[in-house]
Image 1: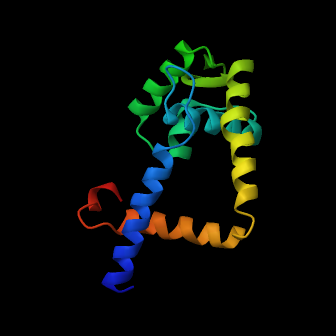
Image 2 (image 1 turned 90 degrees about the horizontal axis):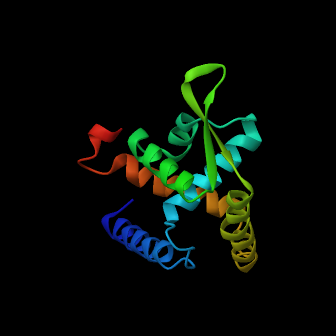
Image 3 (image 1 turned 135 degrees about the vertical axis):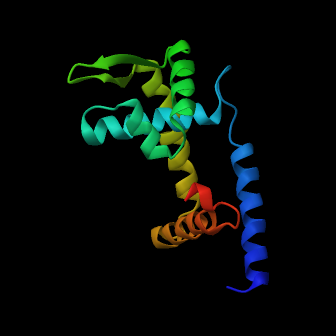
Amino acid sequence: MNRESLKHLIDACFTAKRIVETLPELPSGMKPRHIHVLDAVWEIQNKQGICRVSDVNTRLGITMPSVTKLVQELEQLKLLQKQPDPADKRATLLTLNEEGIACVKRHVWDFHTVWADALADVSDEQAQEATKVIEKLLLTMPGMEENR
C-alpha cells in the first residue's frame, strides 16, 4: 500500500468513528459499550450455552477490569444477572434478563436488520475484507508493539 492509500484509509477510520458516535440515542444511563457487552453475552450464551465474564473479555478484546466494570453497570441497570459458575467457583456466569434481551433486540437485531437492508449492494465478502483491513491497521500501527 502506498502512503496516499493509507491516508485515505485513515480518513475512512475517522468517518467510521463519526458513524459510531452518531448511532441512535440509547436509554438513559446506557453507553454504546453496554450494548456491545449485551450483544456479546447473547451471542456467547447462544453459541456455548453459558457465558462467563472471561468469555466477554475474549470476544470483545477489552481488558478484564473494563469488562467487570461494564458488567457491574449492566447489573445495576437490571439488564443482566451474575452468578458464580457451579463448575468453577472462580468464574462468574452472565445471563441476560428479559429487559436485556429486549435491549439487544431493539438496539442490535432490529437496527442492524434495517441498516443491512440499506447496504444490500455491499457484499458480505466486501464487509469481511474491510474488517480484515481495519484489524490489520490496528495490529501494524507503529508504536503499538506492546499490544500485539
